[in-house]
Amino acid sequence: MKKDEVPQDNSKSYQGQNKLLYAVDDSGHYHGVKSSGWEVENFATQLAVDDLNEQTSQALSDAHSGLISPLGYHMLARRFDVATLAAASGFFQWQINRHLRPAIFLTLSDKKINRYCDTLKISRDALLSLPSQ
Image (cartoon, rainbow, N blue to C red; front, side, top):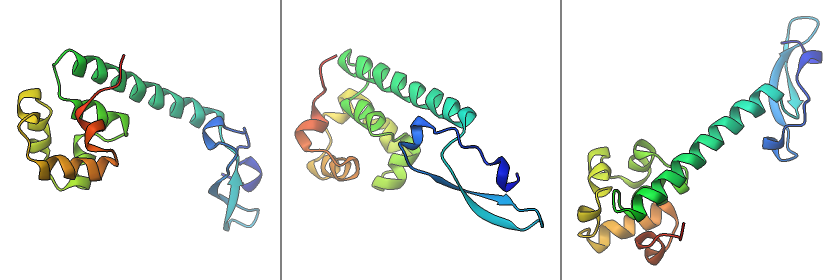
């Protein structure tokens, strides 16, 4: 992309910030150019955020119904999935999947609960409870 073609669409997802993109000048050299956003990127980002919000809402409903543990909701509410939560917490993915089962979650040791609390940056009471729907 050429320097004068860098999009400046004032994307809402940038929240007034700029993003550094690299573009080619007239002599073919790359230079950093600030962009205030691109409408297409904003659309794609909004679709992804809407999808995450829908997954979080479904997880809250499932947790209230007893289909998953509160961990499932809190994990998604903080934008973690099983893989990223495993990487951040030190649990294996199979362990987290197991902890998503309500009966197993209720038997977790204080040490394991505290690991989740530290990783998700929430209190023990918050992790063990759910917001109302």
